[in-house]
Amino acid sequence: MHIKTSHNYSLNFSTSARNKKKIKYIVYHYTGMRSENKAIKRLTDLNSNVSCHYFIKRNGKIILIVPELYEAWHAGKSNWKKDISLNKKSIGIEISNKGHEFGYENFSKGQIKSLIKLSKYLIKKYNIKASNILGHSDIAFERKKDPGEKFPWSYLERKKIGIWHKMEEKKLKKFRNKKISNIEVLKFINYLNKIGYLTKNLKNINKTKLIKSFQRRFRQKLINGKIDKECLIIAEKMSKLSK
Ligand SMILES: [Zn+2]
Image 1 (cartoon, rainbow, N blue to C red):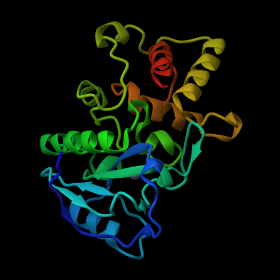
Image 2 (image 1 turned 90 degrees about the vertical axis):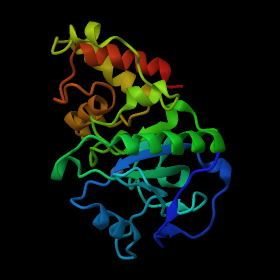
Image 3 (image 1 turned 60 degrees about the horizontal axis):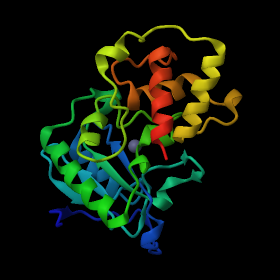
């Protein structure tokens, strides 16, 4: 498969090439900036210390920013399962979107089409597991909200990209805002741990942000930072799918 891209190289990458086998994850981001051009400038500005591998413009065009075999600087301090600092092991894709701070918008049809094409190409090339396709907020929930609750995880799963619970919205909705017991809260945290979220040192982490991150990914209709029965049911299902 051939992916059509233009390039606008960034010097923000680690200079020694990595082994192809090291690449285990795809991490999706939104740019979270007012203007698309400014976002591209930032990712290619030597002083910003940030970059990504691919950038998807609002019109769907893909720009190559850092070649895949070099580590780009998109994830920052991050954790997933037993891995820390996911830059080393991932391909980072930035999708142009103003984000929560400047007017979070739906991703465009062109962006989703390109994202599917690019993801399929990477999955095949690096043999990436469905459960290793992640959002930035999954791996850095205390700092990040991207790609956010408008990101079409369920649609992507139907295109064989990533994982989704596939439960009926109608049935699930009955459990929304339903309270759960303290034991169920512990169960929920345990499921999150199995999915891959960092849940160690619970005393030190921001639980509301952890729950919101889970919701932005798996229960996108209501992001309130509270664990209800719907969240519990979804988390249980996802823990089984997260191998
Ligand atoms: Zn990000």
